[in-house]
Image (cartoon, rainbow, N blue to C red; front, side, top):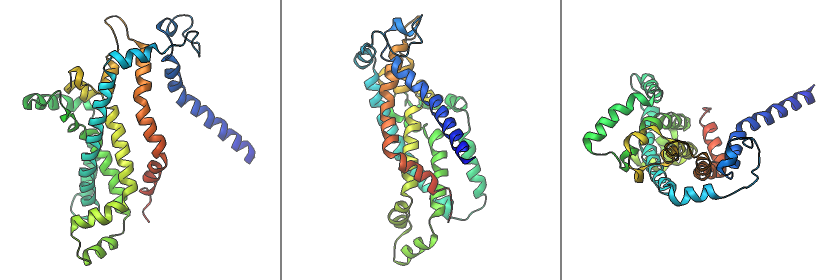
Length: 274
């Protein structure tokens, strides 16, 4: 009976992985196909009869992808840094201080993360237009609407796991509140901080709507927006879209593969309070 259960488990797991990985595999093989083989009778061939690097050459030389990758790296890195700072201070205050409506505050933070972006794009666009902040790296500020709520919730779970007695010992030794947070609490919450940073970076890297609305100039576009413009008046350049997708997926894939153990341990370590 146990052997049958194991067999079923492995079969289901393999089928699940095939379903999940197939789109990525198809994008990869499509990136090497000429346009004539992407559509028509040979569209469903796994391997191209005439594989080519033409799509990659077109994307890397004349489609603004490299510039958009630079913009995405800058925006995602800055967003990650300031979100970690804000989320750390907010989560520490929520987890350590006792005040009325604490649970209500956490609920409001969660509700904010559920707001459809279309609701906030209009007011943010009007504000940025009035302040002349469009087409700039100040796009990192509205990114807080999609990153800070999640970051605060993860950090609250990790700070709540750290015994208060450790902080009390630091205060007895003369450490200030900020010194205690920076030198004692923050290192102990490192798995949660690291996990929050990676998830925030990926969320900022993949954001589309805010950047497409606020940064309309080509030289300020990020990766998702630049890929959406790989088209002509009458067609979408699917080969170039596939090649660009492969190129821009590599950074996030490398990050996840290198730090996957830390990400999982960070998520799990804050899930149980000892």
